[in-house]
Length: 490
Image (cartoon, rainbow, N blue to C red; front, side):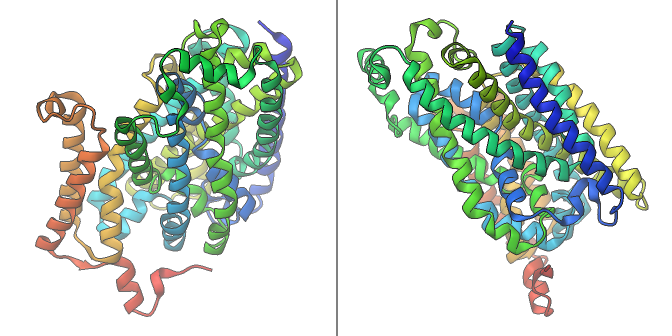
């Protein structure tokens, strides 16, 4: 165990997270007027919202998921990063604006404005469950960081990191996550660029040319190509783009920073910061993964630990500490948002909506903090026993496909609660059948990702039932015709 690296990483995280968290918590007590813990009083500036957008989807799947996936499909794993860059563009130009404009606290609350209470409750439970699934994957990433540095097991590492992850959010909620992200983002990107310079010099004789030769000699030259094979483009690249965009663009986890932004203008301005920060990251991570597999000294460690261990052994100790703190910070950012999002849904859509409509800011904060602890502990207890990260995350994302399309229909065409309820239920049944039965095999589509059947069902059943059932005018169309353009905020 390398105590120097471990203590350096822990010291950095605790100083930044606890120090800034306590400071912001004291400030928030003086201004509790607009759900300060959940939404930071809707006052987050451009830089904070932008880096939070970028880091929320830059956690375990982007780091250790791509390390894993690179092992099997090579440079094509970069499509996971490209998919998230596309997601950010779509979100910032559409759903993030809509959520901020509606002045809601949660996406299920937004659903209730469009379709009523039954769809709201359906989305509340499904979305909270899916985000918790993402939370368990983020916990696995935290465990991998500590396992690589210390030699302890992934479950043990997840418990240590999970404790820090809870501290990341529990003091001041959304404001704490945003401002800690701003600090961590600068530290992480500078550290990553310095790492690539040092890693290039530390590679065995032949450098990156030797890495290329390894795959060519193994008759795996396609591993070096972004486009891989036609099958990968269909099953992985396009499938990931669709599942990520249709899920994360309406996820509470991704839109809570937008709900907390100062204005719609603030959100639009984040485009030129968030997209480059997020999109370039996968290139660095995939390159490191390819190099680790090509080195016999690390190849035998397998897809989860080869790349982290290579970094640990190839870089100077001070840079290892810097990089590990940076990677852990990225994972903790996603962990914190993934634990705050379902806690927000429980507080806003279950506790306040169903049991205590008059709940004060202090009561909301207390309930949210309890849920943060419960969800965080539950997540890191199961973190070491999960499937391949990217495969699991893409399965989770497919569940939100019908919700995405029904929101579009309900905002700009017609609102039918019955159509929304049936469409979501039918699509979720199809998604389950696709995962747990032999249906894909019997149709000759065993390699087809879940998002494809979910997309087909959503685009056929949703508009079809809406046309048959009719309903109210689309929410934004209605507000515009009433002279209040979609409830536009400042």
